[in-house]
Length: 402
Ligand SMILES: *Cc1c(COP(=O)(O)O)cnc(C)c1O
Image 1 (tube, rainbow, N blue to C red):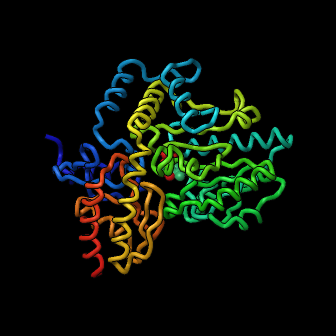
Image 2 (image 1 turned 120 degrees about the horizontal axis):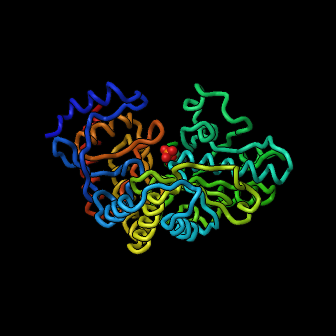
Image 3 (image 1 turned 135 degrees about the vertical axis):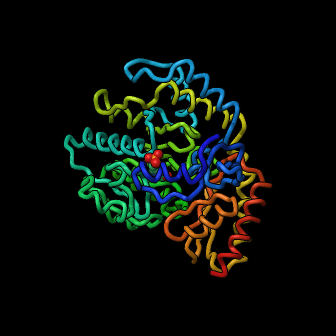
């Protein structure tokens, strides 16, 4: 018999660096869109491990592919070729309509690479360094120092300053504020196609098109961070494909590995030819055979099962159910989102609502200070949306009385 919940939590709290305030639940295993804790309680999961577990839990085909590669070959370094990553690179660049990819181990590393690629491009263009990047307020791009430098949350940045110099923050969805920051040193504009952590804000079509036009006019590279909104979640393989606004460089991670840590940054051939070259960038683990097999499996399964088609079928139903909840409870002021990336804006503490939901065996996330975030596995069905809405309305009724 394993140890009980309290013992496990105590061990964790005794030794793990305290950078998270965790919910007091210990998950043991998962199946489909449900997670099970060590006491055998079943939770409906609308968080997917923060938009990671797109295929749900316990998928046998995925598990078998991972296990087969574990037994065959895990790692060789990037000094040699391996077949799984060659296949993954082909499939991912095709899915993204980009020509070149670099595999990383996480999202934040993908952003680091994207920023380095843009800096190198401008360095070669101008014959000198010292370039600037425009990022967005309320953005989130990761916790490593470069990605943190372009993250539009002063609270996250402040203790670690000075960070990357030359980063300027514009207002998301306000083209004039971006325009005002452009100068001859600007090398890149980075943004999330749909802002995630900052509160689930989809870019408007006019904004994205306007930013693209500004980039074209000034030879500035557009970097789209698709780490959360990509991989089918918004009803296209990458959210930008819904807008028809193509970036020069993009990032992916989270659902790219569906549980195995993998990230990537991709770029067009035009940028690749005038950017990172041998010696400019590297990684020991990134794109190893395991990561390659995982990405290949995820992409093939998503394509075969028409995951984006499924998202487009169920997402309107999720929107409808969330709209109904918003209409029934005064403290819910707005729903916004794209596809299976949705948020409810609440005038009550969302951390408390998420905790109450967890007690009711429903997992939801928060984003920003006032948004409940819904990023379920992409395999959810309407019946799961009904179950979520029922559970959440019970929580909302209790919370409404606070
Ligand atoms: C999660 C996230 C990241 C960081 O990814 P990690 O794997 O946690 O480093 C970067 N950008 C966006 C948009 C994200 O949602």
